[in-house]
Amino acid sequence: MRLKQGAVAFHQRKLDGMKNAIKFNLSKVRQKAQFWKQYEKTLIQLINAKSSEYATMFNDYMGQKMSSLTEQCISNDLTSIKTEIHNQTNNFMKDNNLLLKEIESLKFQALEEFIQQNITIQRNHLEKKPTPKAISTLEKFIEKVRNILKTNPRFIGHEVKHYNMIPDLLQRLMIYYCCFKTQLPLYESSLELLDKIEQNTVTTIATSTGS
Image (tube, rainbow, N blue to C red; front, top):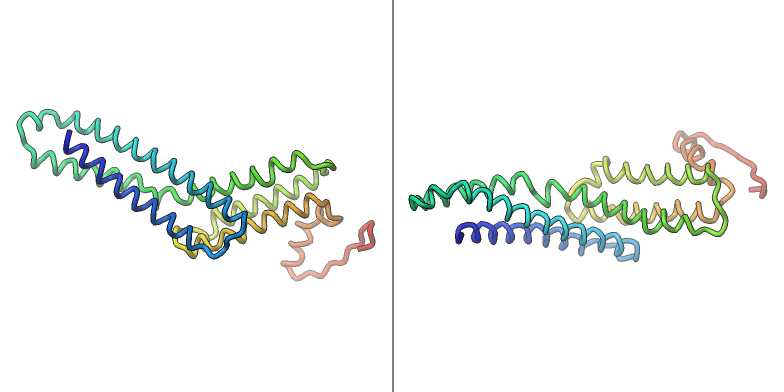
């Protein structure tokens, strides 16, 4: 039992070390705007929840392993038991690494929660109902941001430089939503216009307001 408790305590220290390293890097992000603080709070909550999940998983894992070591306990082969527990602990931590295996997923989950709270829910309370085309355009802009966070190598990682990139994405999302909310004349055509601009094609479009 003592050997199991020692392994659980060791695993918890390692887990806390990884968790605190992530939180420390998050605290170093230059941007301190409200949107970043909201995202950071959500991400920390997700990290804490995942950390607790791993702690429970490891405790159950070691409980199962200790059951299989009963025979060695009876024969007092403590050296073999200690070696086995050490190996099993390392194997578990290799396969279940909060910092390396989970952080990208948690960053993306935090982004989804940000979108839900600041765009999806708010969109349902607009005074003027947006057109289907405007909603479709907004969703496409949001999907572009999702893909950037998920696939752009500059965003993938757990160093301060990676977290420093995220506030700009959040600001971009809110600009897209503000344009959608105010129903600007060219919003429904904005995706096509941006594509043409990126292709260096000069385009002039007259709107009903004369813009």
